[in-house]
Length: 146
Image (cartoon, rainbow, N blue to C red; front, side, top):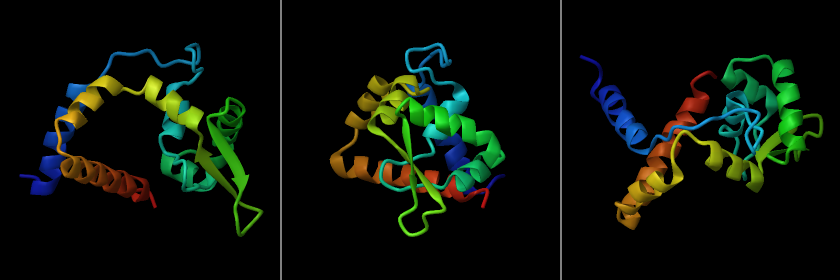
């Protein structure tokens, strides 16, 4: 029998996914011109905290040179910014833009209305706890390949 915590994630995550999943087409030909690979880049970015292209490439399991063209294209579309690091100008930091967040929401495998309905079933303190738990799991996921 797996660890109880492992089992709970395996049991609970599919319930959320199935309740909120939406059939969709995600391709470069959509209004957002965003592929699955593009989406996988954007969902790893934050609007406030910068992430280096090297760290993103390592997490995604690709060479930084492979990611470079995608980053340039997504920046050109206005979905992310690539700015010099505040203390080391030789390094870059990627951040999600408001337009990038809109693209993620519009192309997500999770239907925004269903997610909203799910969140509306929670009391405000439960909602904060649930979102904090998801944020912690996502943070751990980013560190998994470190």
